[in-house]
Length: 341
Image 1 (cartoon, rainbow, N blue to C red):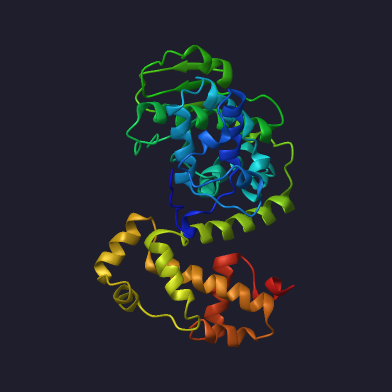
Image 2: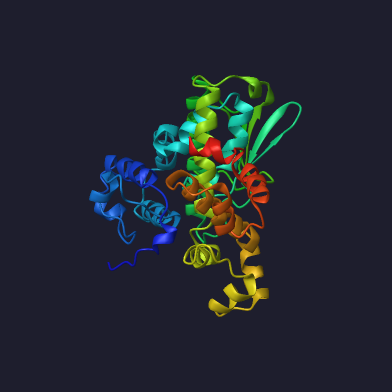
C-alpha cells in the first residue's frame, strides 16, 4: 500500500507510542508490518532514535489496530507501557516537579510535546481535581477509534501519576461520555477506580488531597532546567506546522529583517486579514511568532558569538539595548550575561 509521509514540519515526535502499540499487537499475533500498514513508518524505524513521527501517523496505527480486530484490552495495555521515561525531556520535567499540583499544571502546559491525540484540561475544586477531555478525538468518524483513544489516554494518566508519585495513586472515579461497551468490566481493572458510562463528559477525577504530595524525584534545580528546555521545545512546536510554521520559516529566512504582517501575507498569497484569522485558528498570532523568532535568534547570538548586547539588540530590530534586555528577561527570566555563561 503506497503511503505519502506527512510533511517534515508535522513529524515532531519520537515513535515511542507507535512502538508500544505495535508491541502489544505483536503479542496478539498481529504482524508489525500489518500494524504499520499505510502509516509511512517502517518496523526498523521504531528503534531509530533519529526518526520523528506525527500525530496522524500514530492515529493511523490506532485505526489499523481497531480494523485488525485487536483485543479489547489493547489500549489499556498500551497505556500501561507508556511510562514518562519514554517521553524525553517532557517526561523528566514532570517527574521532577515539586508537587503533584505542579505536575498537573505542567502536564497541560507541555501537552503539545506528548504526541497529543486529545485535548486535556484540569480543574481544581475544594474536594477533587478533575481531568477533562473536551474533544475526546471527535475528529474521528469511528466510534471504535474514539473509544480506543480515550481508553488509552485514561490509562496513560494513571500510569504517569504513578511514575511521578512513586506508588499507586488511583483516580476516585472515571467518567465516560459514551455507553458502556461490551468489555466495560475491564475498565476498572486497569484504571483502579469506579467507572461510569453515559456521563455528560469524559472526566478522570482525583482526590484534591494528593495535590500537595511531593513527587519521588522532586528537585528544584532539575525541574527549572528541564522546564526551560520544555519551554524552548514548545516554542519550536508552535511554529513548526501549519500556517504558523510558514510564517516562522519566512521570518527566519531573513534574520535581521522583520517584515510586517502585510508583507508576509503577500508573500504567502494571502490577505493580512486571512493570515490573522488562520493564525488565530491555530492558537497563535503574528506578533507571538515574531517574538519566538527574535527569542531564538537572541539565544543563538548570545551563546555562539561574541557580539555585544547592543549589536544583538540592533540586529533584532530593537530601538536600544535597554528594550532588548527587558524583552530578554520576559522571554527567559535571565539577563544576557547569565545566558552567556
